[in-house]
View 1 (spheres, each protein chain N blue to C red):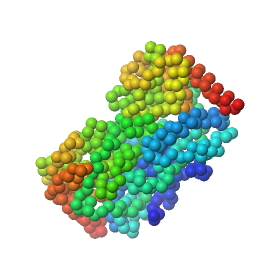
View 2: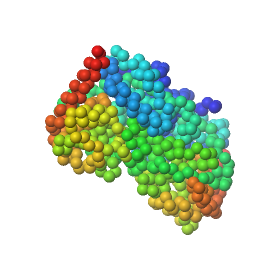
View 3: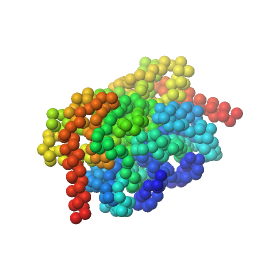
View 4: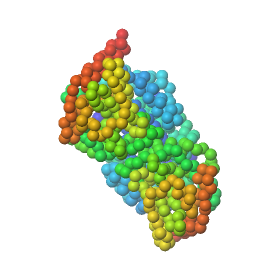
Length: 282
Length: 282
């Protein structure tokens, strides 16, 4: 495995202190950013979410310009990859009590782009229906925080390479999201995605797709989605910042319909990315 | 602040790799062990809980004899303190997927004993009623895992030094535990503690107190405890491995009764600790 370039508080390094609250308690947040030809995609949106998460957890947000410089030190000339930024509350406080924590830690790491089969994006993916449920926690819902054991347990439920993602529900059988992606349903020509007020991560690609779909004239709804609705949807797809949009062709053994609206959105996203790349070069 | 002696995978050090899944996802467990005159207390119970947690998360448990040697390297001659052991899934896997994680990491650290006022144990403590709820997650309930943001948020809710602990409820107003302790109620001469099948940490001191109380002839019940019952209980106390037993004298502004059964248990725990210390020296 090639070494992954990492900056820890601005210095090249591979380690963080054991006493960092990120390690002790998962007391922090992260962002996972697609890097395309050396450029981090949707940077401003990722920074806005990070700042929002920091505010919610009362962690002082890192200086965005500083983080940008650090990100570019790793990304420039690096081609494609995935930039992961971790911000924690740092060292200090007394036990769980964060009062007195000295200063936040920031870690910027450039991982290789994942080697998902091209067929996932083109032909769609199979989802496993996870037994592990997402727990209700309105105070953390929407945030991309470092407490990710539910996702680890859910992702441990299957091992076949044919299954690309798992669908996670809450305790009341509402479909919420994938282990690493957000969920969308097409329903009578409308685009629906689960409400994330009580659990789930408010993905950047989810926001991009919602905005894009509205701009294309689709009616878009954020609402409770019952688990059973996924089987009956006209189309289903999942999104995240790295994969973009994956059509869903099966949930477990059950085949799902695939169709034109997902394809339209996939094309629109490709155009949006191309336009942004052209604009950045101009 | 004096340096805290730490062993990382058996070597003196203060750092762990950024890529460790403990840091990336909180993918691990910990134990917090009272050290009394250089001896870790209830060692076998802590090791049994750690092994149980590892089995539940499918993390290979560290060799207990090796961990014991590492603990004793730090504790011998060190007087009183708190030994914290962290075990994580280590480095590897792909994203949340733990398959392929190379080998678990273990961190052993000896922290100073906390300087809680003596009055907490003698005269009892005030609890803050936390607004942050514990979320339902049967797959993690009972475990002392590294996903502790709920506790961090709950502990952030108060800052006055007079309030020693916070009472946390679940989403259905059942009283579950403190932010760092377990909860007990005395009810008509019986000893009741909340059931932890859906959330909460199954504390070592909780188990010790339950066993001790049974041995003393008390009727002991583990059951759902409604939040409102705490106000009406004959006596209330909280426990953890480091503090032992703290009587509770108030919940917010509401005074709670204090009484003889808590005092009896405090004495019995002191005797048990003395007997064990004597036996260890014999």
